[in-house]
Length: 285
Image 1 (cartoon, rainbow, N blue to C red):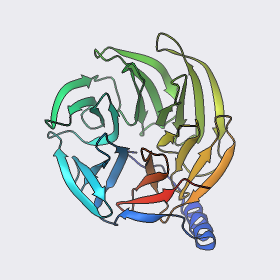
Image 2 (image 1 turned 30 degrees about the vertical axis):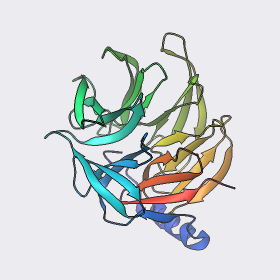
Image 3 (image 1 turned 180 degrees about the vertical axis):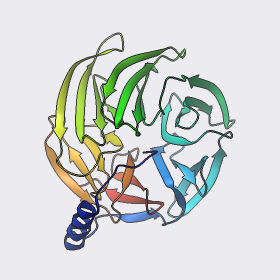
């Protein structure tokens, strides 16, 4: 999340009282203050390291190799700030919200080899990548609580799939690539689409709707369950493909921005905005 949801003091107070009564189910993987409050986009790379944006200062990508073992892995060009990270076919993709780009990086050379740019994007926020390399990007306009959804081909062709939505944010594909999930932070809705053979979307359905707090990044596991970060509520929800809440993971902080699962699916890593930290939890029941 590059800009923040307008959460009332009352709802924050409620969240704080709830946390005090239930306790935390997480521990810190990267200590508080190791990232800026722009910490986002966690992803586990092919090398087994955890990557996240804005380590130590804005505009960086950090690499974490163990508990409290982090370093600046890459400084993005001036004017670029990462928000979401994904890997595909060994390459890293970065949603650069201030540059209005999606960047393709060769990790071996730490070099940007392709730049997907569209000035009509408000700010690419989160991305999901299909098996064939198609990129789906959420594109919120926080100033008007609205958003768009884009599809980008591997060759860099942009298609606006939907406009005049709510504040589009977290986005994820199902493990088989046949479903696309997209949430609207301010409107507190999660949508699910069918992914068609040509990469377009159809059969849009409301999966879930909430009465309070916001929504941010999402990640699916190998069984198709969806982990949803709830900004302001201080929890991560594990949700079935049918939209049923399976469990709720209580965090130490109240402002999770995104989540990544480890390669074995047993550990979750959550970026925490206000704390500038990364919390971890076990996905085991």
